[in-house]
Structure formats: structure tokens, C-alpha cells
Length: 254
Image: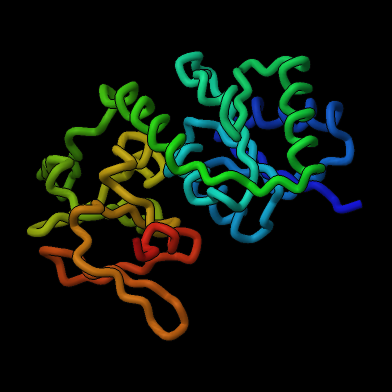
């Protein structure tokens, strides 16, 4: 019998450990191939391990669970975990994905496991989720609009530089700092990229590498070399940015 594999993605240790424990009881033969603390790591793990199922927390830094599911659409079955009732909408019950409301209860997990077993036994293809994810993403964006970053302040000697978020072309990890780059200036802030990502609109700013987030509208062209490696050319800036394989899906021809 073919082994069933799964990935767990949640930025909080305790909920992730609890889900692992409950799955071990509800589905002993299920093998967890990866546990991830944020969205980019989950995308990379899906690329590497190609699990049958991905349990994805909706709220994660870097990329939300919805973004991860969009990247993996058609490649694995998705189950969302969420602490918010507003996400537990009819689309989940009627659609091809499932959700688990935190705190997860054994009876609800048993229903999800039964559905997944049925789909896998029938060799049902992992569903294409674009339409559902677009609808959920709209709700997600509306709910979180109030928490978005508006300004970035950076100390340079005895001066504090202020950058409006609309000026920023890209953010790039630089050892203990994050480099903030606009068309005319740049500075370093002490805040790690992971924390900055939590305050960015994922529709406007795209993670293209573990250490780089770029404003989508600043991308002029994406170049692919003979080895399939992608680099980005920006508007208003001469620097080229590398795209890691985990995020190459963003630049597939439409």
C-alpha cells in the first residue's frame, strides 16, 4: 500500500505540536514529512517532499496559508487551520478543501481524515484551487487591511529616514538587518524580514526568495536563463534580484 505523507505549516509551536499529536492518534500510518514555521518554508518543503496533504495555517508570515495553497494548487490536498470563524465559510464544506477551526477537536479532525482517506483511496486528483483561493484571499485582505505597514523608519547615524511603504521597491535580508530600497535611497532597519512581511499586503509585495520581498508593480521583466534560473529587472532601479525555485510559480506565463 502506498504511504500517505503530509506537511504541517503553522508559525506557532504549540498548535503545530498538538495537530501532530492528534493526527498520530487519528491517522497512525500518516507520515509527517515536514513541519514549517512560515509560508516560504512550506512552499519549499512542498517542492522538496511533494506531500499528499498540506495542513496550512491561514495566518503565517511571509506567505499566508492561502498563498502556499495557491503555489501548490493541483499538487496536493489542502486542509486549512484557522482560529477565525469568518474563514469557515460554505466554500470549505462544499468544496474540495477542508478546514479545522482552532482549537481543533478530535471529532472534527476525524471527519477531515475520513474525507482525505476517501479522496486518496479514489485516487482523486488534488484540486485546482485558484477560484476558491481568490475568494478567500479577498476576505483575508479586507480583514487585515487595518494592520498593514504604512511607514518604515530607519536610523542612519543621527538621522531618522522615513520611507512611505508606497516608495519601497524591495526588502532584502542583510545579516542581522533588513535592507529597505527605494528608487532614490536605501537604509537598513533592525527588524527581520519575517516580521516586516507580516505587515505587508501579499498582493502588492511578493516574496521571491527566502531573503527578498519585492513590490510586484516594480517588476519590469523576469529573465529565465538556460538553467531555468529567474532574475528580476526592476523599474527605477538597476539592481537585479534572484528568484528562488520555490517562488518560480509566480512567473509562469499566463
